Length: 520
Image (cartoon, rainbow, N blue to C red; front, side):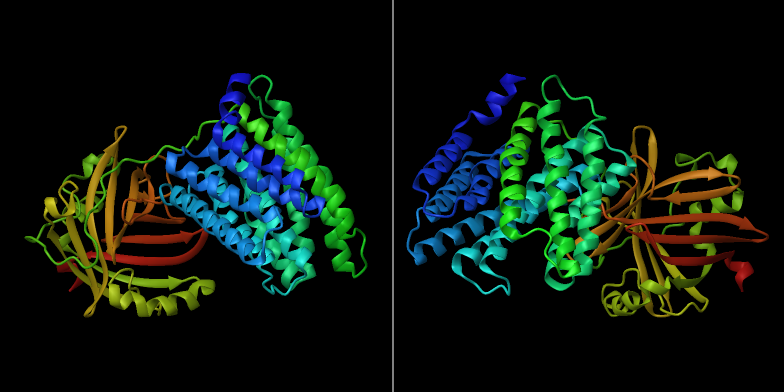
């Protein structure tokens, strides 16, 4: 364990930061409390970055240049040079934000602990902007002190805390942890909005923030850490339980219109303890042992087709060649199997129902969907007929196995252009559906199950199942899920299609499916 600490902290980058911080403290051309932020910029932030992200040589040079820029500002240099140094630091935080965004794009809306770490990196750019505003004297609408404090806020509570909570989740993740992580991840923004616009928002967001920190502190005591690490990880959370109470009292004073805690008192108690105990022990605690990420990236085939599909082959009879590859056909009515294997023999009608809360977005999206020809559904819930055809697609063009495209139309307007294929992972066969979009494609990976004579298809399942956006080299998972249920009802088939975004239901479609000769 001491070996891990030595490897993590006794390296040229971190030693350089500690040396520069020492020089800054000796020069002492600023108020003592200003070094709360300097300590984060020179030691705490670089140390955690070094622990989380593998750094190449030129990236270490970028970090070193940013640290030197911060140190020069502490020397009390000329205004123009100070602004230049602050601009260098701002660009550095933008670069770190990009690294956080890139981490996110490789994974998407999955694995809450990793999302917290990504957010921490991205929040640093906001801290960089407030730091630049403070140094350059930009009028933010707040006092010089509050501008500086906001810069600190996005280095400590936004970066250090988000990263620490993310690492905590790598060790143990519960449903309650996920809720608290959401509050911590959105907290820096909601608290800032409250301070800016509404004391009511401020007191509510701070109250939730305080509650989340207390729960996460309790969570940290339920985790078994490697020997010697537990105290170093828990001390920062216990410290926060004390210091965050001062934030709550400050917010309450703003809400009540009568100061309970003043900013000078906040600096002495809240600021100093967070710097000395929260910042330093967070770095030391996680340097003792960095838990591995639990995320496993999917490795299924992705369509290479982007934009409008222009090249197609011969007509094809069905969406799948053999339904038995997905489910036990004996558990399904023959007509359900026939629909997927002989789709051309059937005729569809649909009734679309948008959720009331989503209708304004659906109305706006309608103008876009007409142009791209994807998810171009009617705004009305009136029953309409859907026509279409199934055509083969060149495997070399698409890159997946036996692709075929199903064009669906309402009248002359294209509703969906979905390219069907399949893939297998760990013995499970998934339906792999690509919807080409401008410069990208959306992939619905559906798991099929047969139960009680009904066929269920869902993206909300384990394994590869999900909705993904293929864009450039990235394949982020989207917070979008769909569920189909297909069954035989009398002499026809009926199906329902439901979609959710961020867990909120926004679309329901009822399908009626008949043989063509019976639909006349």
